[in-house]
Length: 402
Length: 195
Image 1 (cartoon, each protein chain N blue to C red):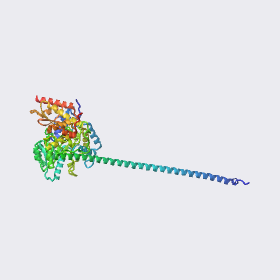
Image 2: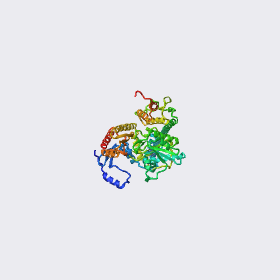
Image 3: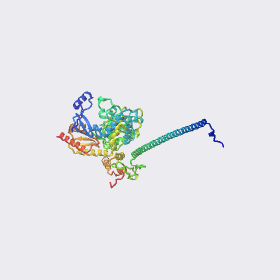
Image 4: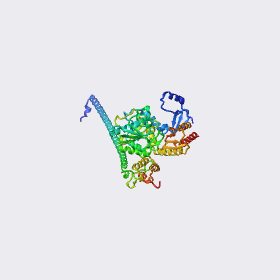
């Protein structure tokens, strides 16, 4: 199908990018110009099936009509007034997030990393309230919490970048899923355990229930907070609105972003009632956060995603996708939950080569590590899309194995 | 025999009398017209005041009804909020209680729906309060943290809309609980054999 959109084209775009943008990204050679549901079109009119959704952002599909309408209507009425005033969508979204999860209060941000900053502040101030002067936050190796300095300090892999030092003090990490090491690391000076229920950037690696239980128990013993980073797993990605709902623990706070705005930047830190009042007047703030357009978009997203029928479909399609993938030559294992799937490839297969080959075949995936494909399709796909994606991955693997 | 007095009056006096009578008649008519006008004006004014009074009375009544309606709405909202808060506290207390002593059964929540009352949506499993008689330990060998975790996992999965089969599979795979029926029955209610 060809559906060419007028524009400057890939070469000109690439030339501008090369000249004017900081070189912090390695981009695939595609210039996307249009999206609709699970489909994307590049500047040449080539169509792609998107099994990445902008890293789990466009979970309701590209340009979902309800989200587009909410954004357009709100932009016509009011775009920004700052947090010095009340706005309806902000208050309504806070209620929706709180009532659908932990029942406490919400702080809005513009991104996931900012949501983590808020969570770190809550944890540290909560610890100071318990008389701890040198609070410490414990994370797992492989966790990814963001790139601002607080979140970066809690992201062990990135925090080791010497050129970015010094990191913030008061962070430590233990091997992923090592329950004993986690129990050992949590002490009286621990402010919080901050972990992902499923590590996304590390290659879709679920945090074991044993480790989650250990974290909950250790936190309870010393009065620390258990904070779950649901930036990638939240908003329906795993087949429940929040991933923790399919685990044996309930956190004291969670962070969300990515899919929350359906493509419009927004994040949030949601607390349980027990730590809802930790941050007080002047403790934190943001000019843009919780703005009317972003919160209106998020309300529209939740209208779509917070639907038991859709969430059940996510679980069923996720299982179906894994079943199809595991039957393919070259696939060692699948990991994850719902429609957050890591595809572990057999030794000797270069996942980056498979990813590039799939892009050429019209399937967009991500390669978080050399042996793994990461699939984060829209939650609104059907079994035909799964069949098509699995077929393309099978063809690509056969080509790479040949 | 005498004649009438009028007949005796001179002609000019007769004319004067006639003119005076006509004038008097005209004056009386004018006075009557003026009086009618005054009455009409008075009636118009009275009707106007009456109408204004009615409009004002309606406005006040409407405002009071509106105020009352807002008050009722606010009270309902507060009641709903209090109910939600109470439910959250109840859940938190039960979780805390179970964490402290996993062996101790969780008592039924007062006012919670009876087991046969279906929860919405239709796909979601039924939820109900745990009763003492039905409560059993999830697995004899389960550690306290695991037992609490199994129960919380099952509860959260049920709340998020997972089916009985999905919850059962997770309990078997993760917690290696052979007989998941007590936990599932406690949370979802006994399985209907006709279903």
